[in-house]
Length: 433
Ligand SMILES: Nc1nc2c(c(=O)[nH]1)N[C@H]1C(S)=C(S)[C@@H](COP(=O)(O)O)O[C@H]1N2
Ligand SMILES: [Mo]
Picture 1 (cartoon, rainbow, N blue to C red):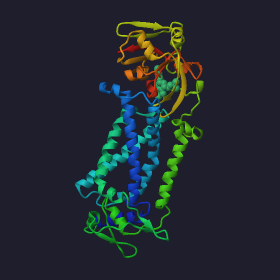
Picture 2 (tube, rainbow, N blue to C red):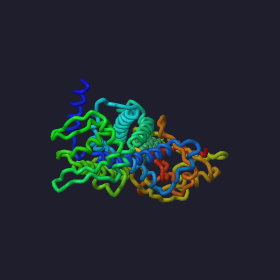
Picture 3 (cartoon, rainbow, N blue to C red):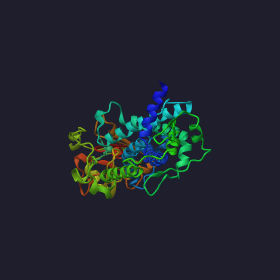
């Protein structure tokens, strides 16, 4: 019986042989996938901690270059999208390894299989909820997006580290080595060294005779590569070139059709991304409207004041008071964590002038609070490097017009190198804390 299962499994693997399913391919795609995941992880951590810093981190985030967050978040979303074709390509290239019997032979193999199962499952969930987030599909999640996305990133990086650790011999062996092709386009596999431990193992396990009477091993996980090595792959419709071509073409298409949401040079071809540049009031997209935030009466009220609070002194500014202060023009992006960003021209007084007006110390952290009630976006804090930066304004105008109510009228915060969520709209107070 066990023998039967083994033969069926072997037959399946044998029929799935292809030049697109060599260890070299697994390594080549794996390298790209690992690079994309690491980029996502690093930029994701940056985004996470700039929004939610531990107290000792507050001073660490630089306020220049002013497009820094736009860049890190653009990379995060773009690399995340590219993970789709890479992950599917990688799965395509290795999935015959599922058909081994018995499924695990040793503790290392159990660990390897468990880590890879965890990695694949977590990655698929991660990139799927990530892309849904760019469409603002929060309602369909039964869990908080940010915390889940953050926790899963550690699961992914941890299982990836285990996987890479276990596969190191294969990765090392095929990092440079290529299988080649003869004039007929047949695969000539890279020469296997006789003392290769992967090959040594294969010779001690039951073998099955292939179509041409050759001996093909019943490989185990990992060793399937050695087994593939020993038998030339048949010519199949999906060759190494087809698979690489498909991955490259889909990755390039996805980037070309979506990256315009973060990188202006690709704006013309941005037809798939949920956000388009230059749309919305004053040619800038709106994330949350004044109506949705229920702030219209308070924002339009003649009683509106910006209260600026220092440790010993405080002052209330009307909009006219704010307009009477020295006005500055800055070009700064709104860079949303959901993956769209756009640069705009803002005008208004500097936050640091307001802080000086109430005698706040240079090193103070500044808390900005909105008229909006009951939203996590209604409050943001910034370290002194942002509060004191000459580009950090209380914006009263946007792209040459009075700030639109949907962009935060009567006044909003705009600072360099910060995520959109922290650019608080419909301000009611600024406090030095
Ligand atoms: N009070 C308040 N401010 C807010 C938000 C909000 O929901 N409420 N959304 C933030 C988010 S997530 C982004 S990306 C920017 C978007 O600014 P815009 O709508 O003017 O483009 O505003 C930020 N400021
Ligand atoms: Mo945002």
